Image 1 (cartoon, helix red, strand yellow):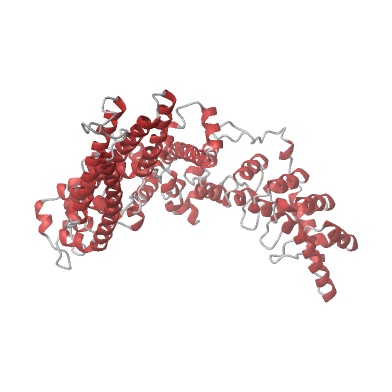
Image 2 (cartoon, rainbow, N blue to C red):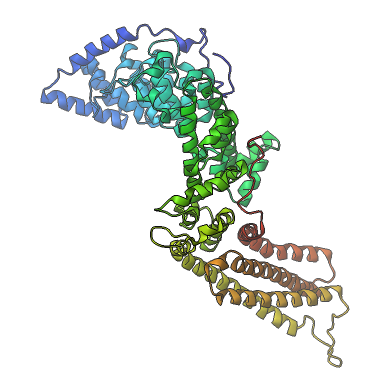
Length: 630
């Protein structure tokens, strides 16, 4: 088999492969099996129905002792259609999974080699059932005894490999690739079966398999099989089913469709920059890290597949139609990588950036697609083109609508969601002509009125979230202020009776205590006041843009600093009283003091980072890639 980038080391279709023996006997086998089935279907007496019921129970229970006795009484009963879909007993046994492998091994040994090709009402052999259940042990057992099974197709001309891919069994898929031949009729890797196999690989996320298929069988990338492309079959005439178009409906397969928190993002960008063995060990010890590694690998393979598909599509006459449909799907599902790659491969695709794509970006809050349009310089003219939309108004009216729930949920907290919505409205307003702000839609509403009406519920939820958060922080800050104030009055070590000067006033630890206790008191009181200002704010829609997030940021920072200085003050006091100037006591106290401070940072730091980034960061608008149009 020709080499490719797919890591399918198990694949070998060379003539020396013992699993790839000729299957010319398949037709004769089908005739023999049909004769056996015809014989078994003539059983209609009640005694025979009871007999088959007992046989069915033995299969379900994995009771080979009972089954063997029944088979001894009637050796041909292994071919009887005892399942609901006329499945013989072997079909039922392999679908029960590896728990019944002992029964399956004995049954496969008992039945003749040709009988393994028995089919159910859909034309599926036992290997189909094993593929659907992911039973790789049974699959290997069946193929070892009858190597022709992988190429025996069902009535719909699909091979067992199709079932393994459809149900997402990766290991079994790779195995069936190694034993399925591509030089016998029917051909599982060409025409309709090949396209269906590629489509299923894309559906379940087997992008390494998909990449292998389009590299080894380039015609699959464009559904281009000679005269087949001009047929009436929808799979060829409908460009919406082209692999590139199907891939453009899979946002989760791209980096833009995956959303990580701060720690996951750090791991994502680091997992392939260090030693591979090290990260493999870390991934084994910490499964979430392994999942991030696999996600990054999938993103890399998807980009390679996307590039290869675009290259292949350029070679066919239907390129324009396929590119257009894929481009529209990419815009609809918010996948900027699709749009970028198509524009790079087919510069004429810039004409697809019309007002419909722009509206999709605004309504669904696809900032990366909006940024891409802005980089082309077409955003201003697209904004103007929406002026005459009498039903929905201009682009500002569309920007004033509430974002879809799946886009809002990307931001934690109703207040930050409201802030993001304001960012969108202000960004569109910045480019729109001034007259757009005063125009009315069919309901006689101006853009600002539309925004307020659409976001009325979100404003109330944001107010509730902000006040609830502020109350919790205010309570914590008030408790800290109480503690450190009491500590300032009851000085560790006491005072001189005559002068009132603290007994430890000349100790360095005492000076650290005094300074940190004072700072903790001042900062905790400041945090309380800031949180009170949040509770008494007016909560107008524009306040969510900067005023309220800024106060919450300052409240979080001052509370964090007050906790830090409180722990320093406490540790200094303990060291003064019991430390006896021993280094190990000081180190122990410092380590213990870091524990609550670190815990606070781990739990609250992500929220603080998100607040700072969304309020003072570069924002969601602007260039997001240096790979765009040159």
